[in-house]
Image (tube, rainbow, N blue to C red; front, side, top):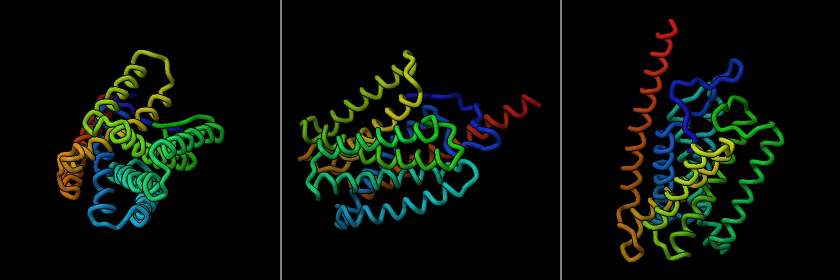
Length: 266
């Protein structure tokens, strides 16, 4: 997975990038976000029995509000950014379940459809802007493509996670190992090949979603289905608390690194 130095500043012209630096901690927080998205989405649609369609509309509303706050901001705000990511994972969870179960598309058809959707978005992004970004998000067009890609990729990841864990019979724990292994291959490609960084990043971004989905299901599904049968709401709150701590620690380290660099230049 692509990892860059925390001390680097991401600028294009006089504009600050509105996304975080891609470090190891970025991926740890991303996996937490995808896991809480899975447990949180299931909590509303299943535990509270609101259904997939209604839950999707509710989460889509939260996504629009969070995205508006992200778009109008002039610089990167860690909590705003990660709230948007979490809302994309909750929308992705309920939307995927709606496509798979309510509409009856099944995991294979929905996965293929969503994969094609991600590819089309990336191709249009490249055609319109000339490059697919993941670090220097400084223009409105790049920001729109960035978040649309994330929203569709997180929906795709949910379908992939459910397909591997249930249809193939691997279960949630072994399904998580499969996606962990695929992420290890992506990381290897990043460090030892010349595969473009943008390709590696978006491949890792897609794969962290089913990893989080299988981990979330492993925590909350009944024992009969191979899960630990922990409460969805409690699990969501616990993972969210861990995520908040990691965001604070990462932000403080970044601020300290930046201030040290400025003192060194002075």
